Image (cartoon, rainbow, N blue to C red; front, side):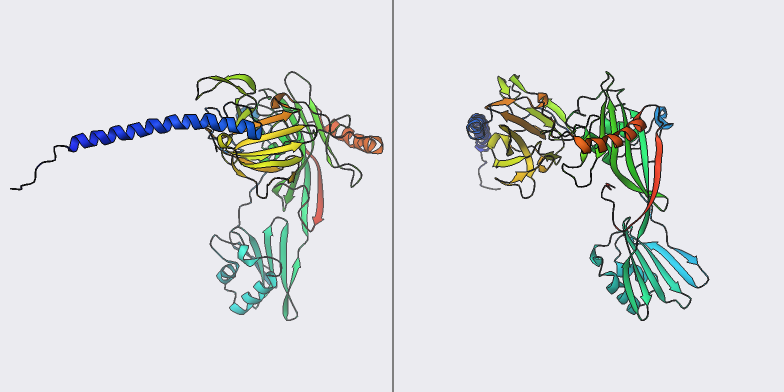
Length: 481
C-alpha cells in the first residue's frame, strides 16, 4: 500500500482558480467598454468624426456580383443568346487535304507548350525551333489551359506551320520558309453586331438582366452609366423597364464577348424615363461619355454611392439607438453592408488627406474634394495599392476594400460626407452637371441621339440592329469580355 496522503485541497484549489479566471474576464470586459468610449472620443477629435456607432448588427454573406441564370417561362420568349459565351475547347482532330494535313487541339491542364507538342509526336529539334520562334511573341511559361493551336504537316510529316491562339484577339503563326521558322501575328476577322435588349425588373437589377441573357458586365456598366441619378440598390421597383443597345462580338460564328453600351433607357413605373447616349467627338475639347437628350452629361461631381452593390443597414440620423451601449447617439453617415473585399470607389476627384488606423473606425481613408467637401470611408479590410497621403485620386478609382476592422459587428463600409463645417446625409446630396455640349459638338451629338432614340422606342423589337465584319490586329478598345 502507498503511504501518500490524498490531496484533500484539490477541489478547493480548482474552485479558487475558476473564480480568479471569471474575475479577470469581468475586468477585461469593463476595461474594453471604457477603451471603446475613449477611442471614439479620440476619433472625433483627430478625424473630425462625430460620436456614434460605426457599424450595425448585420451580416451580409452573399457574393459580390452574383448572377442567377434561372429563366422563368414568362421571359423565355424574349430571350436573346447570352452576351458572355464560353467556347468549349475542341478535341484533337485531323483534317485531311491533298498535300497537307492539319491537326487541331488545345492545351490541357498541367501541360507546357513543349509537352503539348510532344503529345503529337513532333521531334525534339522541330519542337525547339518552333518554341524559339513563338517565344519571341509570348511568354511560354504563361500559357494557359484551353489555348488553341493548329499544326500543319506536309505529306512527309514535316511541320510547315503552327498557328497558336492565345486568346480571341491574339493569334500567332510560325511558318517554315526556306530553312527557318518565321513568326507573324495573324490578322483577325470579327463580326460586330449591334444588339438591342429590352425587359422589366423582376427582382434585383443583376437578376433581371440575367433573365434576358445579359451578363454581369453589361449590368455593371448599365448601373455605372446611371449611377449619379439612380441608386439601383434601393430606388428600383418591380415593374420598372429598361432597354439597352450595345456591341456584341463574334468570331468564327461564336460569341466572344460584349463591347460598349451605345444607348440605354431606364423607366420607373411612376414615369420620368432616363436616357443615356454615348458620344465621342474624336479628340475634340471635352471627353467621351454618356449624355442625355439635351446634351447634358450624365456625369456628376459626386457618385450616389462608393459601392456598386450594398445594403443600407444604418442611415444618417441625429438620434439612433446604439446596439451595444444601449443609448441614443447621432450617426452622421450611412452603413453600407457588403461582403469583405468588395471594391470601394472614390465618389469624386480629390486628394488623400489620411490613410491609416483610427481606433474604433479601423482602417479609414479620408479624401478632400473641391467646394469644401471631405469624404470618409471606414472599417476597410485593406487599402488600394499605392494609396497614401497627398495622392490625387479620380472619381470611380478604387481606394480600398470593404472589411470589418475596428468596432464592427459585420462587414460593411461606414461612409460619411463633410461639407463646410458639418456632416450631411450622403443619400440626399445633389450635384451639378459636369459638362453640357454646345455649338458644333451639340449638333454632332444630336445626329447620333436621333438615330439611337428612334431605336430605343418601345415599338422597336429587341434583336440584332446591324452586323459589320472587320479585320483587326488587336482587341477592340471597348471590349469588356
